[in-house]
Structure formats: C-alpha cells, structure tokens
Image 1: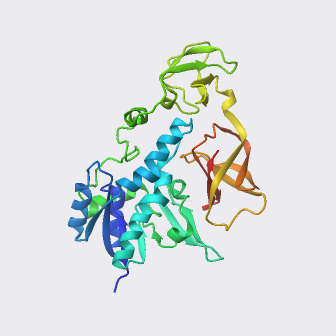
Image 2: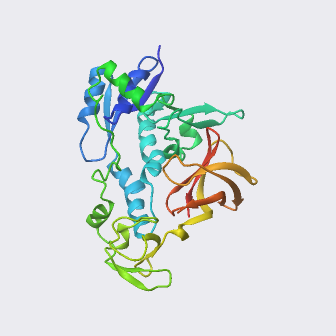
Length: 337
C-alpha cells in the first residue's frame, strides 16, 4: 500500500508535473489554496485528468494575518519585505500539513525546485535544486518539523525538463506561462495595492546625502533600496535610492557608490543544517532572491548574526532574507535588519 501524501497544487506546470511524478510512489491528494482571487480551475483540471482526489482550503484569513498585514507594515516602515518566504512556513505548509493530519498522510509536497536530505546528526537538510531553477532561498525559513515531512520531486530537474514531461503526459497546463508576481498582488503593482489598503504616506522630498532637496517623490512606499528607474530626477549622473526615511518622509538619492557594504546584520534566525551558530564560520550568503552568492564570515551576536562579506555586496536591504549556504546545503537564514 502506498503512503499518503498531500501535494500543494497551484494550477501551474511545476506542481502539475510534481503530481504526475508523485502518483507513481504515493497515494496523492491534491490541495489548492484559495486566497480569494479565483484561478482554481486549472488545478482542478490537472487533478481530474490524473484521477487524483482534489480539495481546496480557504487561507484568506491566515494569509492576511501572517503575510499581507506584515508585508504592508514593512513597506510603511521603509523596509522591503519578502512575502513568499514568510508565507511558506506560516501559511502554505501549515495548510498542507493540516489536511495531511486529517487524512493520515505522512508527507506533504510542493513543486519547488529544491531537495531534502538528512545530516549525520539526523537533522533534515534543505539542499539546492540541481539546476539554475533552484528555489532553496524561498524555502530557507522552513523549520525542522516541516522539512522532515516534505518531499520535493522536482529537485533534480530543470524547467525545460519539467515542461517536456508535462507535454509528454498531456497535462493541460503544459504551456501555461510561469507566474512571476506575488500571488496576492498578481499585477505586480505593490504601491497601488498598499494605497487600496489605506494609510500610505503622501508625496515628499527626494534629498541628497546632505539633505538638499532634489525633487518630489510620490510616497516612499513606491521605492526600494537600490532602485534606479522611475525616479524622475535628472542630474550629472544616474541616481539610485540609497535610503528611505519614513520619519521625515524623505527618499535619499545618491550616485549608488554608497550602496555597497561588506557588513550586514540579521535576526529572527532559522537554523537548518545547524542547531545554532556557536562561533564564527565561513559560508556563502545570498542577500536577495537571486543566484548571487557571496563568500562571507558569519558571527553570532546574541540573538543576531553579523555577516562580513569577503567583497562588498550591493544594497543589503532591511526586510529581505539572508540565506547562508555550505556548498549545496542551507545552513540557515535570518531577516536583514
């Protein structure tokens, strides 16, 4: 008898191929997470076509409490939050595990490009996907109790291989474009979404590092650290956002040279391959959602970790996630403060 497993089925090609792979080994139940914007038809069609049980879970209240409200508060405090990494351990995976508990499933799965392993001390390891599609960064907040029960069937595959498998299997979403935006802001206009919620700041001043006024901004929630486009300020060189000051409603512009630093600090730590950081150790670190890894030393400092990069890194941004790697393995992560 196959073990039971709950798969998060989004209606995209990745989770559809994950379903097709997993059903060979597991008794799969598919779960679509309803955030109130519709779109479950593709997921239902995939499950029906594969002959798999299909359920939905309304996660709107959990998403609002755990992700949307903190996302809005972070932007209004001048940070740049990362909602997907926040959602995985607080909303998405708990919803999958809740259904797993109801039906007696041992495991849950998603269509992320990552792998899971086991360390010599028995800890569950989060490993990079084998290809350039690696999504371990977004999963680095998952705690041990979730990782131990999670299966990542696409960890050895590339996106091209996944699309080819979808076509061979005749899946109805084989040619469906990938979604690149935050699920609850599908048009990608964060500022407009914040404006609809209310309480956003009014227009204010662009200033230089000496406080001289350079122009008017539309409200500081329209800008992120390091941004160059859409500023509407001209001068002798290109300008970049180098600081956001909610307390004075100012956005600081510079030539970008001050955006580079070899130091950052992070907190709210989640250790994966380690029980904790007892002493300084070398690693590589990703400071944003990209494939760029920077050699660094990480040092414990109470409840925080100091990051000392070997070469200056561009714009470590408060609200973003620092993920520490030892080769293919995620050591842990922390929110940049």
